[in-house]
Length: 287
Image (cartoon, rainbow, N blue to C red):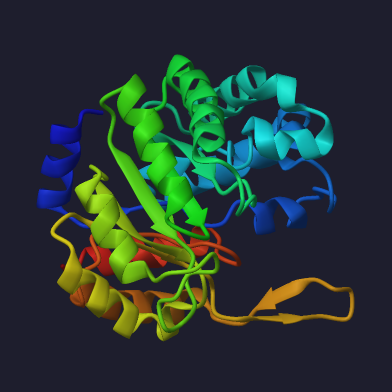
């Protein structure tokens, strides 16, 4: 997908993203504390079933499960030399799941290393993006970022390698502050200046807590705005698992308010399922 094609798409309609991956894979049997990317490569069917369900529910873009497949994060599992093979396999699994009727985004996220040198981040993201490009992603998404430095590095890396659209979303507190310092409003403006094709928020909290944040981001940027929140705030059950209480219909009602406030691309993060995407597709028909 070209950047011009992306702008044309956003100009025509609200774009529906996918929902959660990790929380659904854990329900399907993925153990805690392992390398998610390696587990998916060894057990692709749960991911394929999930992404196929998202595509059938109406997702126009699904995120390949390449989330932490950068060499900095993979080093935690002794897999830093498998960046290319893991990213390539994961993109190919997603493409097999959704075919050609749904776009596949190469997913990049935080390394969790707040003190990492910029050149180190740039090198890690370039290696990851190169593998994703070889596998044929349609666009790139930097998501669940805790501060502005890492999405900046993703943008710089991407622009050295390709002309695909690059979307950036950060995780915020309910007041818009970022976990690694700063705030979403200044960060969104900076990422737009650096050439991001869309910016916004994901994970964070439920859509009921984000109206003011979305309204204020919209005032600061001119590019498309992404909102991909959790299914409310979780409660931890007796087994230590997060339980999300916001149902799909309530989720969609709150997303409608965020679209009215200026969101252009919407989906779900932790706790959401294909049923939530179905509700967003129904909502879309009203616009």
